[in-house]
Length: 166
Image (cartoon, rainbow, N blue to C red; front, side):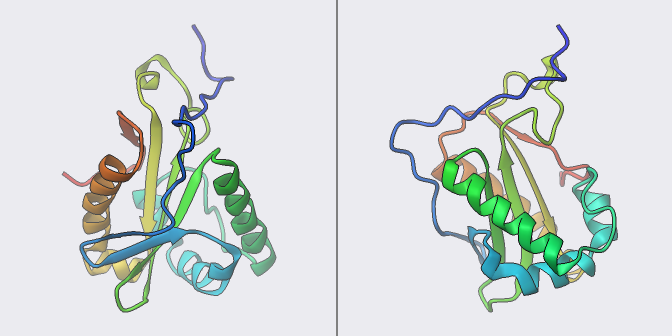
């Protein structure tokens, strides 16, 4: 069957509320909001090449404008509120912006196919160029695995980044 025109929805337990803060190994994550506009815009625009190298996908294809990023962050807020996807911003414990991670139902970021039907969530992440140079891409991946196992009801996670640490 051709699944390309379909997308899954999350099957969340009744009453499930996504965590408003996650901490692990020197990271603090919280829902991505419009309040993160300035550091998000700076991090994305200074890290386009590393985001494309590690996360892959079509975003970002060029430098973001403040207006575009503001609308994008507002959209992430709405999706989080509606539990249709979850986007988190990640800072280190010194409050330095590290990057973001996203939890989508399959078929939104990753095309739905027989190969991914068994997964509950599509997880992806990116870090700024500076954070990547400091080894935080790999550390954030390790933290994500723990956060998803301990704080979310997903049984099987598909990590869709182009560069998956071993």
